Length: 501
Image (cartoon, rainbow, N blue to C red; front, side):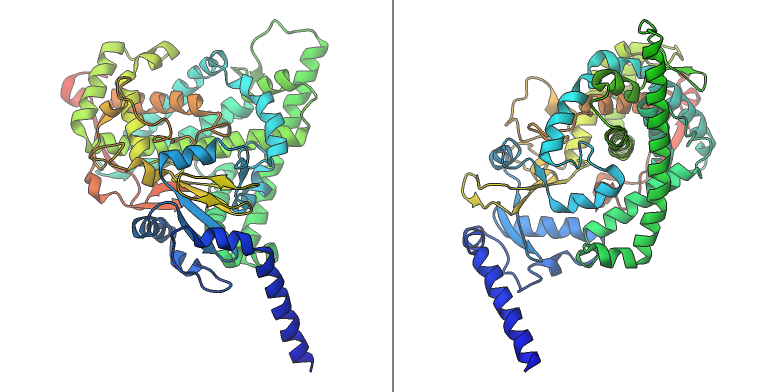
């Protein structure tokens, strides 16, 4: 009798669940997609490694016309890759909430701009945007150049050793740069690449990536019982403590400066370096309107989101230019016109003149968008060109698939930087490497300046090549788009062949 009652109540609960979702399921049935199994939906389509996940999305989009509906457990997802549909989603006031899987980043990033619910995001975005104005960003170029010079010096030991993965060097340089410009903190990642903060950041990224694509790790109680959950808790304690300590110290320094009425001094002393950092600018902009926790969340978000994305995009750019030797030569000729034989560090004016390099970076981000997928949860129905996506579901914006559409990018597998010359017009939502709409990336100018600094400095010192061809570059999703085989390049000093530095 007890068993019969249990079965009855389970069936009753399932029937109630289906009744509440009848409208969503009815609208989903009108969108092309694979048949779903009860309870698990189409989760079996995404079994395997993070490399297999990206392939699974591509298979679905090829097999069914976009938009494509699929179920990940009980959640409905609709994948879109047409510019008009992407515009409808990214500009809709009903698609500003992030997909629920982003919550796995919240223990680390808190409610920073990347993960914040809309109510928090609206307020904080208005407060933060002024800190990313061009004048403030130009203050950071000296730090960009100084840290990149350290990287170039470290790379010298790879000369003559054949191919090596350049990502490690770029990642440590990016981390040093962003920690210094965000918090005024010198983590010295390039000098001590086994530092605790480097290890914690890398491990937390790996764990979150695994959890997102493993449905059985989604419940907190299950995840916390696993070795991954225990590792996550340990690394999280260290990373959060370090950032919180820095925030408290910078707030105290800001308060002391305010008491002394020392507003004319544009420099903030930290470890011998005179530089006003993101956290200082944010304190000036917000005063007491942001708590220590909010400041910690926004600072951590800038470091985590900014470091891995910038390092990955820069590594892709170096790898692609190592493959595309003709384009590398064009970039170097542009650098020669700007710098001549000078060994001086790049300035903000120099970076603005690197127009062909910028075209190459944009084309690299078209072929290898660092965020290949964006998830948004709908708070109300959203009308697409050929379908209505129901409230309560999530939309997956498939950026990589969009960027390889031959309708907007003829010969999409060819590297053609000239696609991005100003005269070439296309749908404004056919190219969205930093997302688009009101919730796009606030740090896109920062990222472009840092990427141009790193790539240009490397190319001024070294000629780069690689054993890979473009067809050899295999991709996976570890939160961000990554190369399965890394970013192998071979360095040869410029002085060895053409007498230039």
